[in-house]
Every structure is written in C-alpha cells, then in structure tokens.
Image (cartoon, rainbow, N blue to C red; front, top):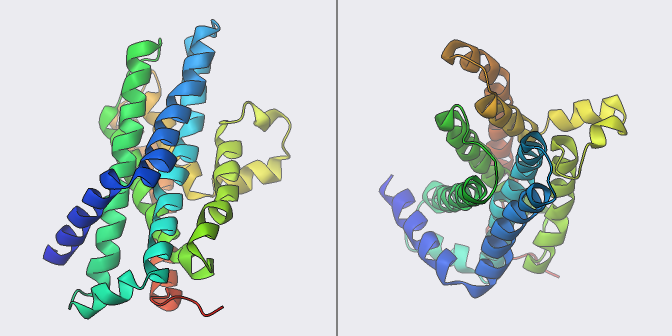
Length: 253
C-alpha cells in the first residue's frame, strides 16, 4: 500500500507539470466535455437533450482521460526504460502499475467532475438525484479503463502510436452512449447490444440511474447490479492480461 501511494503521488505531480498532458488530456476533457452540452443548451434545446449529451460524453471523456492517458504514459516510460529503472529500485510490479492506475483514475474523475460542475453552473442541467452513485460510476469506470489501458500497452509498439490506437475505442463508446447523437435509431440492434457490453456501457447505465428523476435506494441498487458485474468482469480480464502480457522493456525494432 505504501508503494502504491508513493507511485501514485509521484505520477500526480508529473501529471500536472507535463504541458503535453495538460494540453492533450486536461484541455480536451474539459473543452469537449463542456463544449457540446453547453452548445446544445445555448441553442435552446430542452434540458433532457442537454442531459442526454452530457451522459453521452461521459464514456468518451473517460476513454481519453483514463484509458488513452495511461496507455500513452506507460508506453512512453517503457520506451524510455523508466519502468525498468523503477523496478530496479525495489518497488514491486504491483506497486508501480497500481500506483499509475490509481493516479490516472483519480485525475480522470477530477476532470469529469469539474466538467460536470461547469455544466451545472452554466446550463439548465440538474444535479444527479443520486450524486454518490454518479461519483462511484465515474470512479469505477475510470479504474477499469485504466486497467484495460495498462493491458493494452502490450499491443502498442511505440508511445506515439498509443493515442491513435486507442482512439477507435472512444468512438465506439460514444456511439453506444449517444455522444454523437441519436445513433440508436440508425444502428443495427446487434451492434447496440454489443456496445452495451463494453465497460463504458455499464458506466452509462449507472450514470443514467443516478440522474433518473424517480427512484429509491433499493431500486438504484437493483439497477446497479448488472453494470457493476460487467465492470468486474472487464477488470478481471484486464488484470489477467496485465499479468500475462504486460511488457516492461521497450520492443526491439
């Protein structure tokens, strides 16, 4: 636990001091996360449309701030032999990767929470009926996507390829959640069903439950059962992939 905290704190300091990260992750997350819902609100759309756009952006932003970010960071540190040097200090593999996953998850949740607060202040978007479920949905989704992003680095040969290679996931997640408009009316049913099985589909279900106007604690817990199970399955698959295929050293060209 101590190692995890040390690596996480170190990663957090680097996160806010890296200008490239601030431009590619922070600026994009806040800009896109607030820009589209704000635009829809300003053209006079009803609050329901603003909420739908806000919810549709959640999986896209989580993909960028969590999965895409950690895949890029870990691949770069692998190529620069930083990960190999960290292992030589006596830090455990679990502490190194766990610290990076925790740091990335925390930063992603903070960015999405900040984006939501801006929308609450500048648009007619209402606070979620169940704010705790909303925050837990963001935290769970960010953590699982960070685990999957860590596992995904096994497929990335160079750090500059991490962004483009993870980008298709953002589009698929956004398509299934309505981030690109009501595509559910034109996409085939089998594709929508497949997209719902993604971890981001589970996050969207939890967020929709949190924002639902009517509901009870019992009803919320019942509605959260399947999405939580889906996230747990994806987390287990990601951890298995990390243990089996994660690479600590740079690939040879």
